[in-house]
Image 1 (cartoon, rainbow, N blue to C red):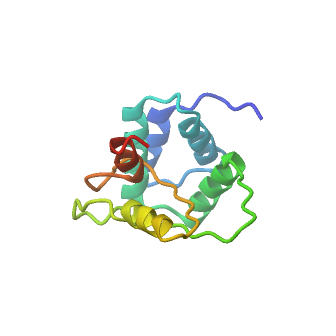
Image 2: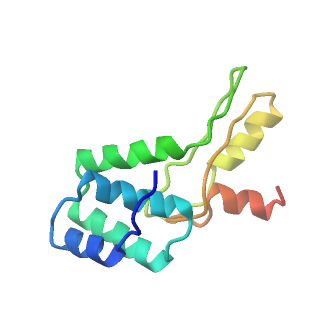
Image 3: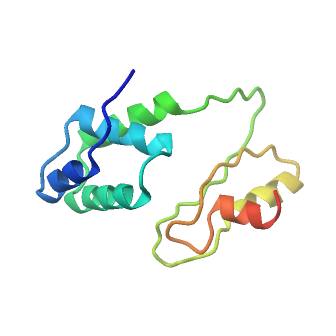
Length: 134
């Protein structure tokens, strides 16, 4: 599916005016974000405006559909555990879920770990693993 370029300024203006986004608008924005080709400051302004307005269930559902459509499926044939941090605690804590994953794996558990860079904490899973040279 080909989509039109996203006008971050128009979407952000709509959100700051308190208006909800149409399904095609928010899905186009998410596709653009996932492409990795967007200006980070524009995306940041858009996401902050969306948070300030308050996300509707329709907007969140539309975002989830795009994320699922772009997710890389994995085939796991054996039982495994996933440790994931909650993030967003606002306390600027350290990443402990990745440490827990390493300890669980050392104890024999099969661990599937996912994560990202730090957003609201001192380190995210990717930062932590990168520092370890993994």
